[in-house]
Image 1 (tube, rainbow, N blue to C red):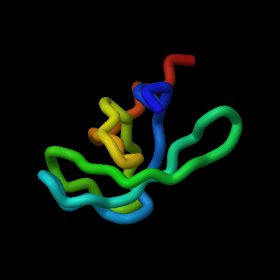
Image 2 (tube, rainbow, N blue to C red):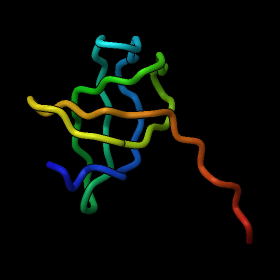
Image 3 (tube, rainbow, N blue to C red):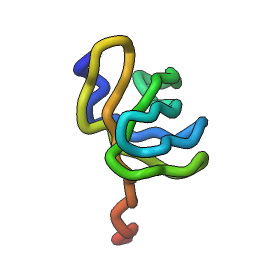
Length: 72
């Protein structure tokens, strides 16, 4: 499951911050998978996230992701 570190996804069930869990959907290998997720700060449903770590029990540690500006 460490292969999900660095994956970008979206929050499907708001994350309360700290120890509270939410849910995220990650784009992996041409498909999507859902994981339980925690974050230091609250992240609302629909916001983009970046996976920064993996915890036991199919739980990922995430942070809010702001995509870099398009430079084309």
